[in-house]
Image 1: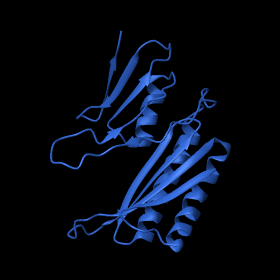
Image 2: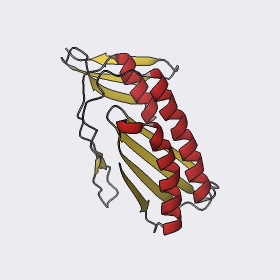
Image 3: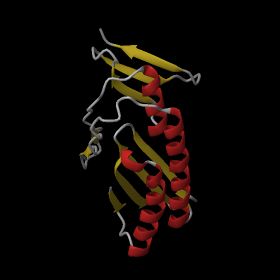
Length: 178
């Protein structure tokens, strides 16, 4: 398994790197052979008025869904602890709820990010979807694991692209293409 620990606008000390690798590695053991790679991103919020300014974000790429968690605390070690606990809950939920017949699929590639330095609105992140056919229920679980408000996927019959989204009332909506 490949694990990348990186800092956004900060240097990651060897002690923090080792601590993050240990915590996320413990969660990774639960996934066994399903795990492909993990990415840990650590950063400090620039706004000094934010009490919990130390943030740890983890993305785990598996042969099935991508699992993501983000937590903040006043201390980086505490943020890593919180995010690893959250990941462990998500991974256990994934392992107990899913019997995925598509586990032999390729992992999702890491997102490609671009940025523009002026004040104009711009596309700051681009994602390439390598979607596999799945049911709306599988898409709903994937969306929950990622923590997103919407999820784009290919229909089980392989025809058309679908968008699953969370409605304001807490239910879900499904947009299908013909």
